[in-house]
Amino acid sequence: MSREILVGRNERGDRTARYALDVVEEGDHWMSTLTKLDARGEPESGAVAPRFYGLTREQARRRMIQVLENEYDVVASSGDTLEH
Image (cartoon, rainbow, N blue to C red):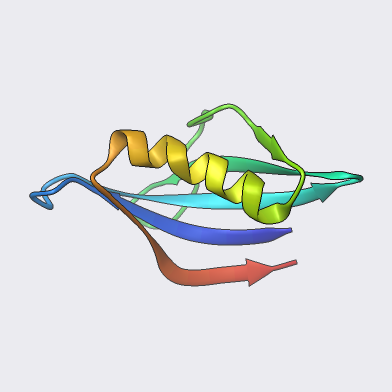
């Protein structure tokens, strides 16, 4: 499993949110999930988006990032990644 912290913000910068993007290998495909983080960096309850599947890790990752790109003007990785 890998976890990446993403930051979404609008163009003016007055709306910013952090998310944890998890990508997990499940047999012959990959699955991604997205969790919104609170101000302390703890996961909030409830799903942000449905699970997405891909044939590759990058495909599953990109599909979930596109969800955030529909909500925010800028979506960037904070540089924090964890490999499990």
